[in-house]
Amino acid sequence: MRRVIQPVLLVLTVLLILYPVKAGKAGVGVLNVTPTYKYIKLVNGEYATELRLSISDYNSWKDIWKVEVLAESKGKTCALFTFLHYTDEHSFDEVDIFKEEEGEGYLLPDLCDVKRSLSEKSIDDRCLINVSFIFRPIPYCTKLIVNAYDRENKKASIEIDYGLYEGQRNKDIIVPFWTGEPVRISPDIPDVIAGSVSVTSVAFIVLRGGIKKHEKE
Image (cartoon, rainbow, N blue to C red; front, side, top):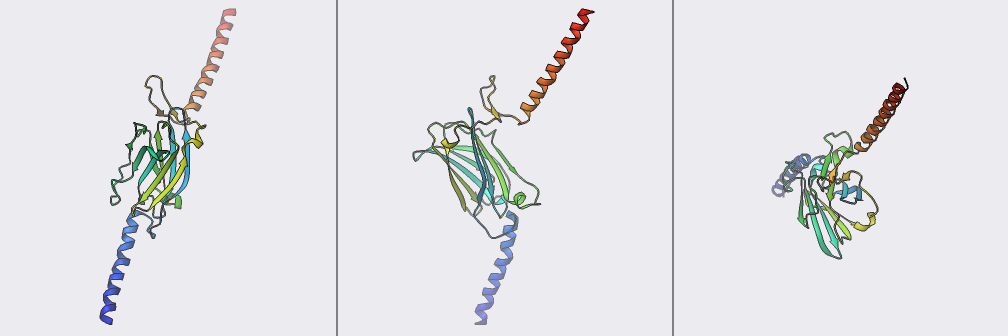
């Protein structure tokens, strides 16, 4: 009996030693749990749509390796977008690739974005990854299906009514007339422009007043 128990204990000990090492490399080092969505927002603009996802994984944001966005219309696929955090679930080298697997060139990968914290001061710092997909409006699309995968390929899935947000505008995306292509602008630019216009107006009024005074003299 002792001969049977000893090998079993040895195997269990090895597993207990190895598992935390694997989990620790992924991040926080807890038993694997399915990712969840902490925040989702769909901003439907005139020229482009932005899908903002805040994905939480208690193993750490390093455990999220892929996010998919499937656009559907009455059960038919209109487009499929993918964000690759890593090339596969075994890699730890970040690649941050946005690509369109299916569609008619809707995705704007240069405008897509991913953010995560390099700090580990809070749970959010360790667990949240924020992914933004920017794409042109998809005709006839009725819903979006979002799937986030962790390293064990556990999937967090959610459906979003694409038409529900039709009235919103994305102020961060504009289309310059000289390019005809959507571009992202800083949220501070409108304030800077407004401030510049105000300063210019004041300067013009002061200058005009000085000219009139000089003419009277």
